[in-house]
Image (cartoon, rainbow, N blue to C red; front, side):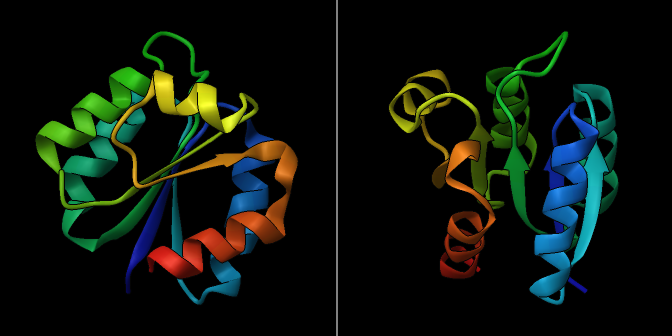
Length: 117
């Protein structure tokens, strides 16, 4: 089964994203920091269809995590999802497949995920 890796330090967003992912009939993997994300990525990268990445993560931010993804699993599309406006997201993490402002809500994110998948 294809999986989506959620990388977000806030549990409320991980929970919300899991609901969206289940509606797509996919499984969700969760990481709250860079170390967890790297471990999951190394273990599951052949099963990961997409990564949802927050920018504001303590210790190693979203840009740093994106660089790890680009090095070890460049084939996996990344959707940056943050409270920052999309134009700021593009500056902070250039090269992601898509960008999502968390304020735009679940329906907008769901449509973006459907388009990519």
